[in-house]
Image 1 (cartoon, one colour):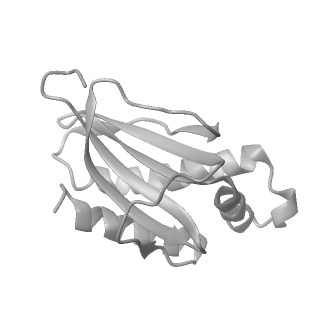
Image 2 (cartoon, rainbow, N blue to C red):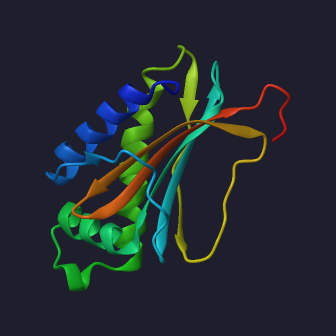
Length: 152
């Protein structure tokens, strides 16, 4: 089992249920990225250094924004989608932070949207990756930790 895998699963399911009122269902495998992706990051500094990332389809981000902000799906703007993803990432990261050693700080969320891009947190290594489906769309939550040698 990966570091905090079960706890991350529980945190993500709780956040999705409380914020969106929709179940997040664990996938046995990490789903491939969709054509258009929305990714959110929050970083931990202090006693434990790393990041939580969440990746979903742009279609799901639009659905999440419509639900969170009470607007019609067609009226959810790219800014709404980014705000929704930022909030889901921030809430998930904040709950994961509670599982880490005391003295960690959490950054503001960063959100990126696009297709055919790669992103990484330099100096970190993947320690946990948990795949889900929500309303048929893939969602992946990853926990990264600062590498021992600071490079990766």
